[in-house]
Amino acid sequence: MTDADVKKLLDEVKGNMQKALEHYEYELSKIRAGKASPMILEGLNADAYGTMTPLNQLGNISTPDSRTITIQPWDASVLHAIEKAIMMANIGLTPQNDGKVIRLNIPPLTEERRKELVKQTKNEAEDCRISLRTTRREANEKVKKMLKDGLPEDAAKNAETSIQNILNDYSAKVDKHIEIKEKEIMTV
Image (cartoon, rainbow, N blue to C red; front, side, top):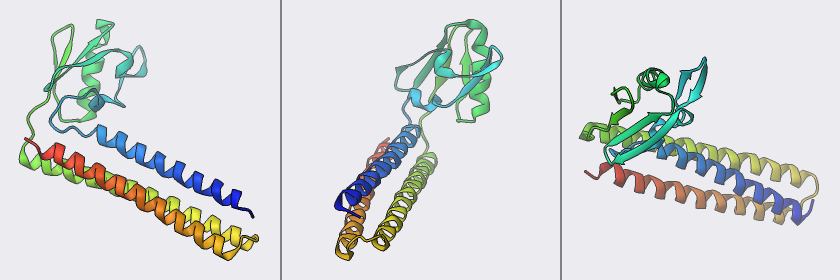
């Protein structure tokens, strides 16, 4: 076992933790803080033309103002399928169909709903932290295996310390994201 193997492991750990953080950021972007965002509809599929198709492939999704999302399908025949998909998604929004465009009005958040969203944000953060700790555990197991395969003991200790430092850095980034999102949600 060489220092190059340890460096490769540390790079792998950073890559996996970065992926976990990016997934967390993606999940946070779907939590609406009272503002209209096309991300709210991310991942929704409508039964159009006999197949489940993502909404963003059926028309233009835009936000003409901070409280409205509009979906303008390229083919008017899929309007009802899009409307049904939004209703079935149970995202707390009621689509308004005028025959050409579907409008989603984002209601102002109540204090109770804001607290629910903060709780959801913290749950997503905990999922991310679990993923980060799992990456650390797996990396430490690899270090122990490397130790058995001939890695010097001091190099193994340094690797474990480096892994812990990487985890601490990413945990701090998660905390910063929580702080920012909580402030965004609680701002009236």
